[in-house]
Length: 487
Image 1 (cartoon, rainbow, N blue to C red):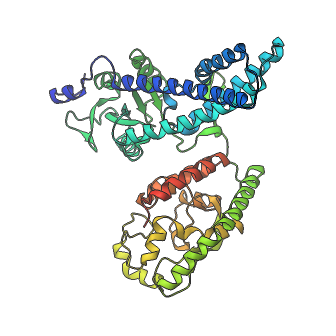
Image 2: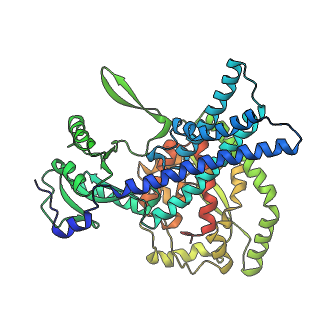
Image 3: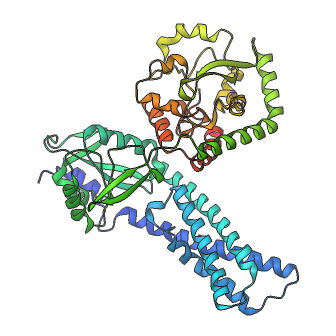
């Protein structure tokens, strides 16, 4: 066996018979169950209190039934999959399960009462259970934020062994370090046969302990919670099946990354064909009813936002005009859907003739791609720096949304000279309208590398939906108020 675990490594990795993740998972699960019961109890007592305040008489049988529903509430959540470990900290999946559980219990109570001709107070179906669902969603959101904070501090992380080629492993390591809220930390790696020279090799600090034949042994030695197999031709179906068998006795989970990256959600499904499970990938929908609904939503929200923000935008315009020479609004040609150019509107954040001064600063570019970015750009005014930090300079782009040139959510609108340098893959960003915000905005803004920003834009293009837009808009508020990555 080629697993190179020295004495120092063995001392560090000896976590005892019980995995560390099992300890915090059980504690976290108990907190979730207790919180769910408390939410249902509060909903029950709240509805009962309102009924008593209105003068209603509540017999003991109804009181017992109400508290019985509160005790059954965790069971309904469990049937909906709320307590699955994989959903911890993953907002959309967890929130959807809570909603499904609440709707399911509400339907079960209503149908059961009708089928058995049992008289049940309508307040249970129309008030208590919906209120319990809302309270549980709020509670889960608070717990999710708390979990993300703990993970950002290096706690509550699951130990992962990465299996694949060096470049793919390095990319996975960087992704988990950049986004710790996913709760994964790569603690060891296994490379293809012939690429493991022996002890001492590491990938950006992650030790390599063997090749593909050693995965099960390495996972056991480092007390891994999961094995992540990245796309590589050396591991075919038979090899993956044997790997799954070798780690199942230890309860170690297996994740397999498909060769087709950044395509997920409803576009993918497993279909058995001729006895073989095939991954069916539907084409993304860029036209039709869903696109019409997105455009209508964008224009309605943008119009409402312009109405509400008219006075603050006027104040910003006055500040820009009075603190530096030049107009309040800055017009710049950008490239939109299908390569069509349009004028984008922004509050001016730089001195006059900033574009002419750009050529003198090209050598100081801090970005690693076709974009030009400087953390301390001398062309930015004092008011402009504040506007950029909180993305207030982007507010006039609501006019572009109303005009149909932009969307609320989408890829970053590029400059024509940037598009001229695009390769074939990057031009895929132009099949949808550019957005005021997007995955790049909520994932690091200007702190992202060029490759990472492109990857996020392409992920949005391949998986866009109105629900995803709402999630990004919700996260944008947090990203903007923090002010990080904006310059």
